[in-house]
Amino acid sequence: MAQNDDNLLKKIAGHAKEYGFIFPSSEIYDGLGAAYDYGQNGSELKNNIKEYWWKAMVQMNENIVGIDASIFMHPTTWKASGHVDAFNDPLIDNKDSKKRYRADVLIEDYVAKLEAKINKEVAKGEKRFGDSFDKEQFLATNPNVLRNKTKIDEINNRLGKGLEEGDLGDIKALIEELGIADPVSGSKNWTDVRQFNLMFSTELGSVADGASKIYLRPETAQGIFVNFLNVQKTGRMKIPFGIAQIGKAFRNEIIARQFIFRMREFEQMEMQFFVKPGEEMQWYETWKEKRIAWHKALGLGEVNYRFHDHINLAHYANAAADIQFNFPMGFKELEGIHSRTDFDLKAHEEYSGKKLQFFDPAENKSYVPYVVETSIGLDRMFLAVLSSSYTEETLEDGSERTVMKIPAALAPYKVAILPLLRKDGLPEKAREILSDLQFDFNCQYDEKDAIGKRYRRQDAIGTPYCITVDHQTLEDNTVTIRDRDDLGQIRVRIDELHDQLTKTTSLNNLLRKL
Ligand code: GAP
Image (tube, rainbow, N blue to C red; front, side, top):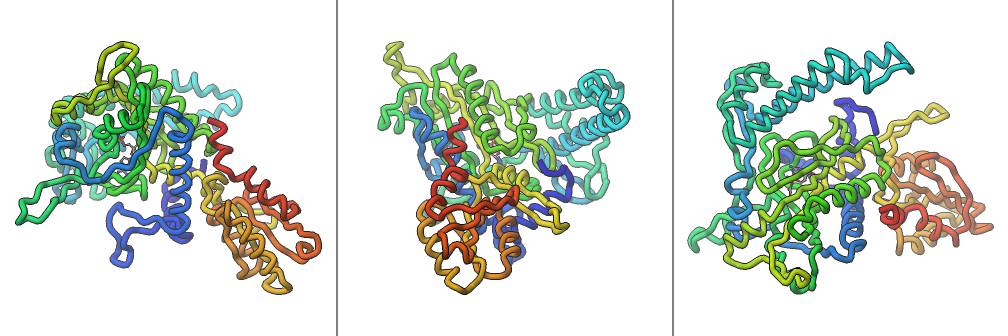
């Protein structure tokens, strides 16, 4: 993983814009908070991530099927799901700066500072004791570390309790007791904490017709729940089975920051796995293992992942864990695995008056299945790939390069085809190769500028291989292939290119590891 500094995220956002991965939304009008557009390279990378997820979840599991539900849903859906009443963030305003914050995030940021103090102590210990440093023992015995750890636990417990019980007064008291100041103005003059619903609403139909209030879905999951019976019956699905979906979700986040980490319009890849009541914890563990394996197969670095069990469970869950990723701003939630019980299906039964049950022939009875959900933010996954791939290097000849070491199977382009010169029949030969490879691989063709400059352009967008067509090609039908990461160049016959690229860039390489 790349360095862990504040500027890194800014650098990555700058690089993403300069090289056509991500642009601020409607930038000519100065952009719109927390909305982004994926550019020509970004949309390729995003599609490849989607394909990796879809194939791993749907194609590779005979008992999982995929759907594509609409964003607009009957408004009662959100009453039943609990989102109208309980999908809130605790919000606090600073009376002096007039800035608005999420109260829980202010407290979490305070906790992050205590964690940073612990890390600093560890770094000091490592420096002082060198190879003989025993980190575990240090963490278990150092008085400063222990004091901060106790404080962190106390704060987390109190915050968890406050959120769970809706005791907003105590959350404000905690902010005051910890002496948390407005990060912008330094003022400690806070309003009370209030609940703020995160759903965007709009109107369906014209006012004259008697418009009704509807919501932009805040999660894709409910489109799956309301289709449970449709899919089960038409697909003749037997428990346990899953329904997967990729689609947009919308949340009116109070603070939307950290580039594409927290957006108001984002995309989710969710799968609801319907199981027999009583078997949910076993499936919960299974899906935790399967999902972490999916991440690790990408090779972004095993140390960059960790599980984080939820202390504050959402209104629908009896167990929940996050897969956190080591983003430039530290370990943060990338994916959630939730045991959602029968909360959603039961609630939809109650509100719709329709039976949402499975008849189990083995048991000769019907029941409402329990659900284990896996839910990953596509944009966060994109950021994980982008930030772990971003590398600045000084080469042997002293020159510098910025290279995106994106896993080959996800890279926007698999190969660039470059005639060494723009004459002597080299471009024609290069285009011949292109017209053959482009059926199976997303290729770039580039004949402008010196070859070194063209290599750098491909490095910057993460193209794993560059094929150079030179004069020898015309004589013996061989080309050189340059490897993006180790810069090695080998000579290969043109008729071997297809196999070679399939071997090194195919998504199957990842899927076979699962
Ligand atoms: N259906 C369950 C659900 O929506 P969640 O933890 O609220 O659970 C799941 O969201 C995932 O969606 C998160 O792990 C995160 O990756 C992504 N996500 C949530 N809010 C987001 C936001 N504002 N911007 C980008 N991604 C977000």
